[in-house]
Image (tube, rainbow, N blue to C red):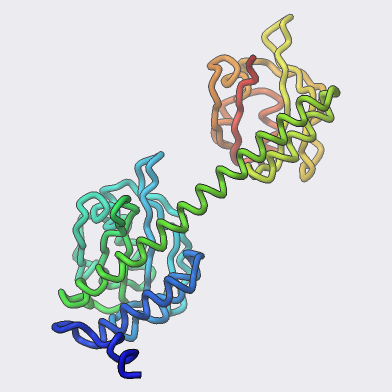
Amino acid sequence: MAMDDASHTPPPGCSPEPYHALLEVSKSISEHRDLTELLQDLARRLPRIVPVNFIGLVLHVPERNVMKDSVIQANIPNEIVGGKEWEIDTHPAGVVWQTQQALVIPDISTELRFPSAMALMREDGIRSLCAVPLTTSLHRLGSLVFASVENETYAQANLEFLQQAARQVAVAVDNVLNYRDLSRERDRLQLLLEVNNAVVSTLELRDLFARIVGALRRVVPHEAASLYLHDPAGKRFRRHVLDFPSGKGLLEAGGMVELDDTPAGEAFDSQKPVRFTDADLRRFHSDTASKLLAEGLQSGCGAPLLT
């Protein structure tokens, strides 16, 4: 028992409360593999040692070089919803990710550098915050943001503790992200195998399309899929097959579509995938574009079919 007690004794110079709080953080990380559940648990444990009402996980998205509110948790009632993306220099988390230096804002009502972010935080009742780097030895992931409904909440002592906590959380986040990447790659390889099996074993185009779409839907969420084939007689497409189980029936297989008046035509001409939104569809004047809008389509992607 004496040895067990000694193993939980704070090292010299470390006050007991923050030390034991870090043990609480370690315990939380060891118990959770889901980021949302992890932050919920931290939002429950941390206020016992540091004034925290909100904890935000803001991750850097390399593909678009933006910061994304991935998970936001609070220990008070709130209606904050994550998912918003920010340019690097428009959010405290972006500056922290870029400089790898913690940032304390004692009173967000006087902060002028991030007007849009500060306005949203004020609406949520936040008055002060501390953002610290979320970084492992290998990756700069983003920033962990701690916020309070009181002004001037975070002092230097809080900052040092929160940075230590963030280093532990960063390892957990990195593990979760790596697991997601591995799972996604596994699913994609499985999809390619299923598509290849369908191609070599199915001769009828409609059946082949149905098998491919069924496999794709597990990896690429979508409500509608269609196959357009070029008509060599003119600058047109023929919609050979259509899979739209939740549609209103406005679109049918077999229709002709002008090549220059659809996102599919853009993909065909450029020989590159084309992403589009409902706003992009409004640029077109084809009957197909009008029907897609009437079906409630919000976004989509056209990929060229090449040999």
